[in-house]
Every structure is written in C-alpha cells, then in structure tokens.
Image (cartoon, rainbow, N blue to C red; front, side, top):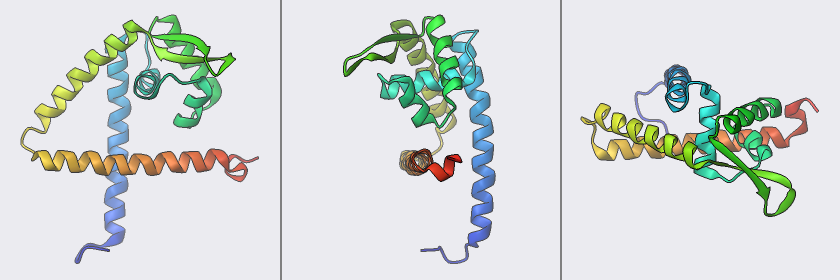
Length: 164
C-alpha cells in the first residue's frame, strides 16, 4: 500500500514533525481563543467548552474519559467555566445523583462567535485550495482523531496501561 518512491521511515518522520507543529500551534491558538471568549479563561477550558457544545450534555466523568485528562484537572476547568457563567450544571435525567454539564446560553453564544470567525479565517487562509482538498483534509484528520480516541479508550480500559 506504499506509494512508489516514498520512503516509509521518512514519511513517518515528516508526519511526526508536522503533527508536532500542528499541536504546538493548536495549544497557542486555544489559549488565544480562550482569552477572546473570556479574559479569565485558559486554553484547556476552551477545549472543554467546545467539546460540551459538540457532544453535550456530558458528565464530568465523560469529559475525563473523552479527553484523557486527570479528574482533578477537568474538575478545576469545569469549576472555572461554571464560575465564569459559561457552563451550566443540571441533574442527570438518568441518575439524579450525578450532574450533566452544558454550555450556558452566554457560553454557547460566545463560542459560536469565535468559531464563526475561525471558520472565516480558514476559508481565507485556504482560499487557493481546491474544495475537494479541504474536504479530503477534513476526512483524513477525522480518521486520525478517531484513531486517537480509540487508543485513549483502550488505554483507559486497560489496567496495565494505567499502572493498575
């Protein structure tokens, strides 16, 4: 399945380098977007709010599992989001002892505004790309993300992977 003339080792070296650069830029962008959303919000909490909007309502334990983060880190971020009025807590309809989290009306409106601006920026930055290339990139990144999610799920379900 290798393309002729493409060295597999060099392809993975290039992939690792480019993904690393993408991740570093992503962290910097998340921090900037978080400040745009609210001056007291950190970048990690921005990602949590975005996940809640895309997949919510979710319990804190769901966020821990999906993000592969420490429970105390997620708890601290949730507390920050709630205190800033960006996330609402409600009783879980399936288990009244638990709570589910959703973006507040304010949090959703602010996040939507930032996402619209970010999409416009992507459209501008990639204006000379073919639409098919943009769609292909989205599909390939989706495949990569699903692989990462599966690996996180596997690691959290395997006691040996967690040292237990």
